[in-house]
Image (cartoon, rainbow, N blue to C red):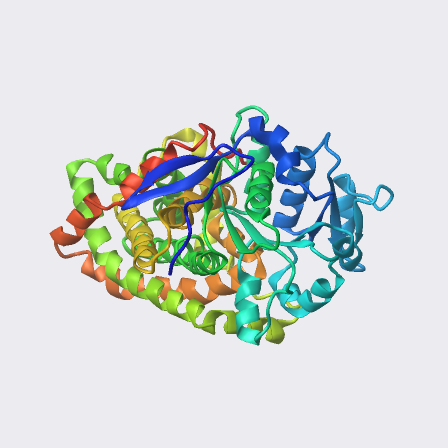
Length: 490
């Protein structure tokens, strides 16, 4: 896989950041760049955002706020009878001022059409949307699902239209919350990748960068739509969601079998992953988790890490293969057809989740320490995904964002405020199906392979590889672009 990570802009000041084996061009965002948005959006007088899910809501609101005072308008397009219309109106998008309308009508009257409807709806209705587009309208995506579907179905994007993607590395709620925090701390936001899949007139790069700046992205890097699709779908099923579910369920069971009461077991598993471990990685990197332990704790971490790495890597590689050859996408489409409008059963009924409220209620009583065994399992799984992406040729900015930064700066804080089960049960249908399919696979691998092996001495070669891993330099470079603000979870 190849990815063009060097590019130029006629609008924005770019930077070069060092990554393992070379450099990448990146754009440091911030509200001081908002005056440049009209030039970046040259030729765009109306942005149509189709959909009002978490990403649709966040992106429509951020774009509208960032473009306020210009002659560029943002409109939301919804399907007839959509239950989301009332919420869109409550947020100031109304039919009376032309900011809310039928999705096909909005598509037909917009110069940039951002497709943020559910994946199943996009697969079923993209031809109608394509047919409605005005000549030269730009198609905007926020992940590569549609590209994967077109490949599987033998379709293609309509000729004569630029196709760009801006893909925030976090959930919609995070995109909006951190944007609002950016009022106080310039640059607060969620990192984004961008891709230019087709460029009809040479303005696609600056338009994509402008879209990313308008979303509040503090750090924008380039990838390809193929690369983004693969890393995004694999990441959902691995360290961003599916593997996290497998990790906490397996660790909770391990702690209970060792004699812990339910609250202590929850603290040592879910609470540790989403709390002190995630915060340590976010602020100081992966190595800092191990370095913060005493010698006895390091020994526990080392044995857990080296026992977990290989089985986790095997599953990540299997997921990657199934995403790459279309198997995973076909399984999602089949599930959509089977379930229809009926939601999948919820995972939040397993015994561990009953302890969550009690754990959250006593957070103010003490500072929970990092559990070394839990830390070893989580860091090993993260490293396994990092290594799989690196071997497959993904750019380093994409690797660290999809494998580490999105987890610790967006998803895990949200899970900390709610819990992992809530996240799995309330995320997008595509992510939910993937997490429900692969989470139990990770859980079984940890329980049956990794945890028994953790009784043996640590593998020194694996530890040396971790200590000298190039990801530490890549994360340090990315940290220089990170505003000093954590997401606020109300």
